[in-house]
Length: 259
Ligand SMILES: [Zn+2]
Image (cartoon, rainbow, N blue to C red; front, side, top):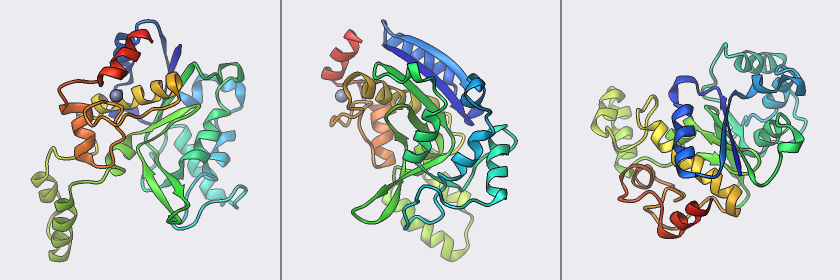
């Protein structure tokens, strides 16, 4: 197996080299390759700018409406994505359809490398969501697994729910016009926040989920203490990735020994 790691705008938030070292340590037989910036590693497959329109068309204007292919774009939207690709701006407050974006990024990977035993993992700071047809709404995602797999740093902060009390007290703070930084201090450590020092450690577990997707077709585990646990709450994420006494459950540990 081969694992390729790409940086799509995460910059210093995440130490991808440290994640590569971790994967090398866990996957003795696999080859791990750092490819740096997604848009600069393989420019022969089209200029980075040509992807701006495709990326812009993956944006979600309304969380209650599924986006369709070929939606009309404004000039400014494409220009924004060009600046974003060249690192001149950072995407904040924009939501992207995770599956659309995955298809766009897939086009940037050489065809002969689109193999099930190759794990392409793209660390992005774009906020991703996927459409849920049962309640007709987009839902935030930490990651999207497939070829390639996407792990979102903003998703790790925003997608898993914070403690219930946080939302209650936040409402009180807002209605009283109180400073929200004080609220964050009160809940310090109980969720992953922006510029959180624990982000790289957490992302290692999500990289492993992508690896297991390639190995077995299933990135997840039911065991709450296993790093492959699909956390819906921040406290579950913190337990699975940082606090559990073991990294992987017995079954996944055995699978790793063979990988
Ligand atoms: Zn497990």
